[in-house]
Length: 298
Image (cartoon, rainbow, N blue to C red; front, side):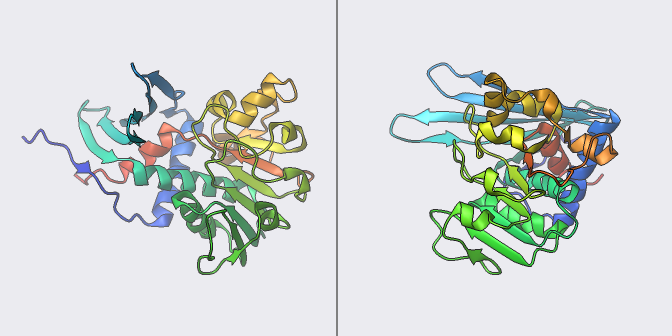
């Protein structure tokens, strides 16, 4: 019997609907109590750098994504990510994959799930802030859950709008009048003025792993209806939520709901009276959802 496991060094093209279904099912498993989502852990390395580990488990599989950040004395830091999936029936690894592209896909699909659950059903105007791989993936997945007819995009580095979009002169110009605003930047501070948004507008944020990084001003949280990807982890790690809690202007108890609760109807939906803010930090259950799609059929 072969002891080798499939190694996926380049993520194959996965159907958008298949990825969305996998992510939705993963959060439904969390809601049903048939999946486990620990908090991410950070291990500081001797001499500098760190490794972030994202874990998750379902009834038949366990996954761990490890993402090292390795500073180099003569150039940019090395940043990689690998996900391994183990069968919880046999204890054997069933797939190992490079998670660079996987992370982009699962992050954008999770945001799209939030758009599907939180945005108005007739949402037609979309703003995308950013122009990297995450921004492009977010645009693709968001279009799969709503029929956007007006798409604006803004990035300081962008000189030409992608097909089917309009290039805005600023982030706030792109967001003005939008039904959904997708923040896809590596900024460590606010990139739009959420106080200028209309009630019911949905803003999503992924931010970065930099401690306390945020894409909206923490002081504005009390004016928003705030949701997260998973209540136990997002309130402890998301930069603007942590800062606002430390300042005493917002508390984790004010989080209106998370994706498992939204899927099961156990939390309040947006009221339409204030802008809506959805924050995700990235979860092992999302990595597991996509990695399971790569496991060879038996």
